[in-house]
Length: 397
Image (cartoon, rainbow, N blue to C red):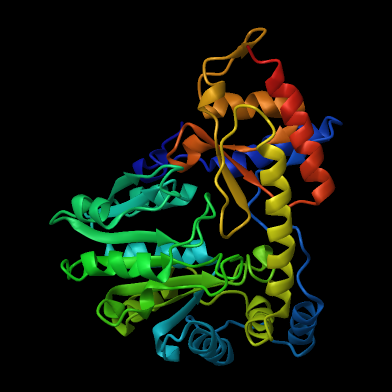
């Protein structure tokens, strides 16, 4: 007899992971599937990082690690935040966890009580609203559009805040849209937050190094609210280390201490070998992230140029990450044979079955008239995928 807790029952399965699973199943059946649903770089972890991990194994660094992370990794993160972001965080304000998703969960569990409201701009990363459910909070979604470059305005933020608001979730560069808030835009949001001293900001900056505008801007730079900002980051995207599972939060000391207390009971310290690899990555000269960023920028331009030649798709030019969030309402209501396209999920399933291209529906991100392409694939694969998509949508009537 199934007797799963309400806590788990109310969670939706990750649609990005579900699309990856379906594409793997089709591949296993012998189909040539191009997977543009995954949110990870297609580059390999740099050799110097792998060598640091191998040395850690040879040096028998295989015992339990301190709950918040090894001192040398905490020091590396503290210096990185100062060097790259001009943010001052001491090592006791930083907690290393099993990926940025783990860090986000720790912070939400630390701050949010049942019934507290969490403001989530949409399109949002799939896990935000599910994690808010997990901690028994209530997501207050602010919808944005292609025309606003998928960014919220100060007025939208002001209108969404109520006496129950506890947290604003901010992601820049954004997954799924690739949008980036400028310093001026962040300052305008800060001026709203200054009027609401009980609202905290979780600033998800995991795509920091995949930024085509130049300098990354963090909302933690504003002194007036820095004691209410929690920066979440990691090495997954910037150093092609998704499988190493190293994320971290940098926060006011009392929040970091609470996250450490929570993590001490749930998982303890994260993988000792992965921490040594992350230390090498964070202490490096930044050449590897820069190389990846340049490659992704070129691919972005290739995909945007090709996509705009396919009737029915609308897309802005994202300034970061490695996604294009395309508007597809033109195709809704159309059909091919017995297949009717009523939602973005229908369109994605049609493209997977007809063109063998895996893409994630916008409904997963709180915006049903859109689909998300990842361009973390070779230029050859990307052009092949877009050629297939063009043929598949051309027969929709």
